[in-house]
Image (cartoon, rainbow, N blue to C red; front, side, top):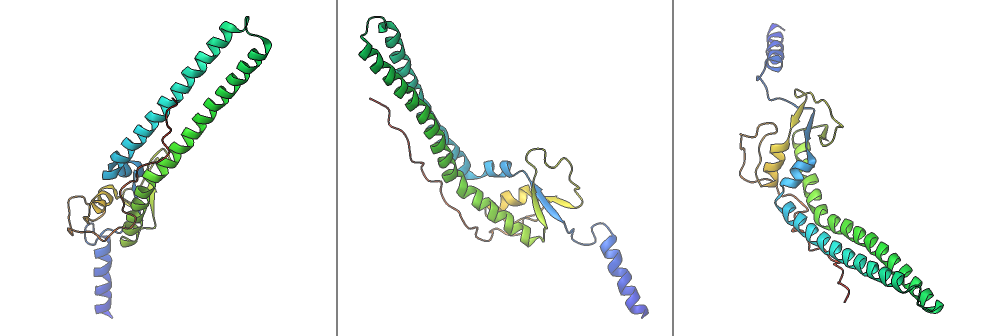
Length: 207
């Protein structure tokens, strides 16, 4: 009985003394956007999106200049044109304006779809890594610190897993909240790893 009590006291002391046992965190936290933007393919995807957005903007400006010229011609000739020509020009202006609005809406929709195609696979890969690290470390959940949703985090209960996630994305395994300790040269394979596709849907300039 005394022996059992001594063993129990030793276990309790090991649990209570700082550094006596490996810290067990209840949850992890990180900036999702910071880690996503640090991924190797993110810069390529952003460059592709910027290029596509530039082409859409160029086409939208072309349509706008075309409409302005049509409207200027209409104002200049409205006193001299016969009624039938005036009605025809008015209809052409209406169609041109509606086409310009429709193009801007379509361009935004295509940009949104291109962003999903380019960023989506990276988000899926990151989510897989977060799930893997969460399960390996027995975390109840992983919180995203982006925005102001988490004004306070108890560092004793939660671990900043940013460096551990970045390392795992690069094929290395390090303990959470300990970026200096490298425990393995290669990580377990992560699903959904792919090169961002080239977005489709670039509009062709009008002649």
